[in-house]
Length: 219
Image 1: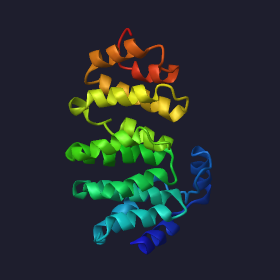
Image 2: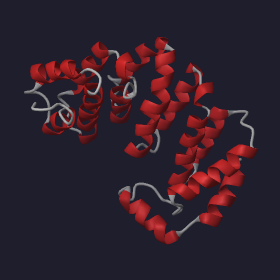
Image 3: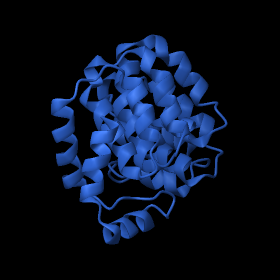
Image 4: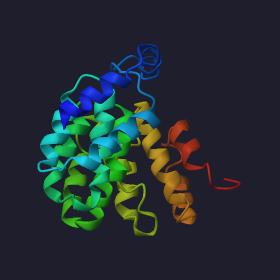
């Protein structure tokens, strides 16, 4: 499959677009310059005719490729097979979070891949408790965001505990994640989020506070 994707991507590459895409990502990663709609069309073309025998291995091979489009394709492939994922895939997902880390991949992996797995397999929750203590900020961000789509099923105590654990941090991506997770939960339990903010307002950064209060009227 990798070779087929490489051929299709090479034929669709656009150096001019690639420069703009790389600049948007602070030139952290090289791009081929394939617009998202075209990339998704090419992915569907490949996915439809190719059987997947070793999903973790394929994800890692795609992740090893130089251009960012391959990481996006890996995430698309994983989400396409989301219902087939088991707890055994988590070490692979963790490796993807730790490698070539940036918000464009981590913010897909945490809520869209790790989150659904943890919801179905709560035995993974202790691992999330380890993640919020991890020295790597992208793992901590993932711990803050894995419940983002849980709505009424959110483990409120765990969410608030994770936020408290990271309130002291100055990193933009952690502060943003705190605010984002609270903002999403405020759509379901606004009173709970108001209470949390009231108790921790002095410790919340302006960024976290602004994000958390977005849907809380007159607060």
